[in-house]
Length: 211
Image (cartoon, rainbow, N blue to C red; front, side, top):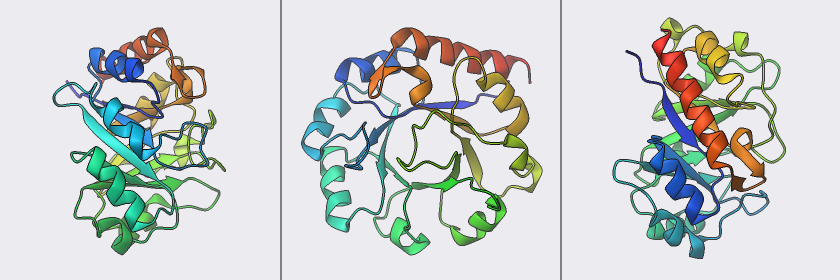
């Protein structure tokens, strides 16, 4: 059976990290971008990371951060995967010697295959709806714009407006390696709903069974 990986992003409370891990998600994301409503200051990252279960990957999200900001966050969460949403080049992203995910805002005219060429060191590309807040907008994009799975050379993580009611259709359409959800499992910005997280995970697993 295919197993679509699940990342829940924009976590700001320890209890939400613990709840997500209890649902056997694969990764949780912490937003290190100060203009986001889900921003987590570096001094709070360690407390959130302390709730991680074994084998759940923490992901640190950055938008045009300085090297010092990235390094400071990594001091608190040394096992983290990095995720970049700004104007960072491939050289910028790989400079920290860590595996990283490169986000791609799927604005009109963007070709994901071009981004694969621009970021050859990326572990995966994250296709997201364009947003001034760099994620968590609750908006989706036309999944038919994504290249077919057999044309892609990088793992695809699908984001943008996903929730329990549409993630099965998204998985069928895009055949992603993983899905990334934030606003679709929230009670309010930065506050996750355990019930909505559970429903989302169940919908992903239902889609996997249908493969």
